Image 1 (cartoon, protein in one colour):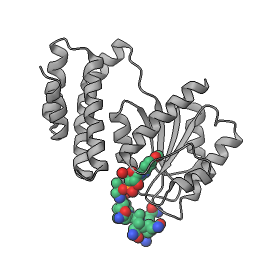
Image 2 (tube, helix red, strand yellow):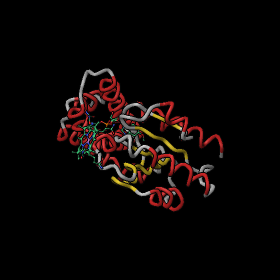
Image 3 (cartoon, helix red, strand yellow):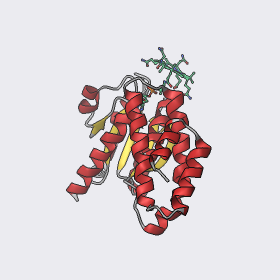
Length: 214
Ligand code: B1M
């Protein structure tokens, strides 16, 4: 079978077809890593189209669901073949903020790109981010904020991580409509991304940095 068909089905947000094609590709003996790479490339293309305003949030959400369906088929095979996730991310919307659409979109793109995600939800207190960094072996603490009034909580998390000496093992990343690169730099975040697709690139970059530091 042609792996490009999986990308097309992903692009169409056709969950059943992505499921069937992923299953068929494995039945035909294709390498699980190759199938995974195809799904990731497909999702990267969707991210690129989203960035260029060629498609919008609903299409991305549907494709991300299709991506999950494909990944679910691959999961047991990936576990068997010992392929490790790209990295582990603890993500949440900060204290005082209940908006979760953007955070969910970013999570979906992360999952699509092969990251393992711990979704901490919304209105996440500083302590919960800290516990996640401390106990869950995450590589990145990712924070979303949609309100100018809750942005300060990102700084609180970073300062607390610093105080507890955790910044040598986790990178921090921030985003959300009112957040800017300048704000991210001012609060000492390691990374900032404007949207869900650039968030994937930034997370990959941060994981690379972390690996080089170790
Ligand atoms: Co609210 N709200 N809201 N709201 N709401 C905004 C954010 C607002 C801009 C509307 C406005 O006034 N024009 C305004 C904030 C103003 C400000 O602070 N400057 C606002 C307000 C004021 C409020 C309330 C205070 C209203 C009230 O009660 N008086 C209240 C606050 C409640 C609270 O959080 N404590 C409130 C409530 C709500 C609803 C519950 C009704 C609902 C949220 C539902 C939900 O999320 N489940 C809601 C909504 C839907 C919005 C708008 C309309 C849409 C937000 C959204 O989902 N966008 C929003 C106005 C707007 O943006 N047009 C608004 C789509 C989403 C995909 O985009 O989240 O920006 P976004 O995510 C993007 C990027 O920012 C980035 O990637 C995503 C995809 O590309 N990104 C990251 C996000 N997180 C990232 C993390 C990263 C990297 C990138 O790395 C970690």
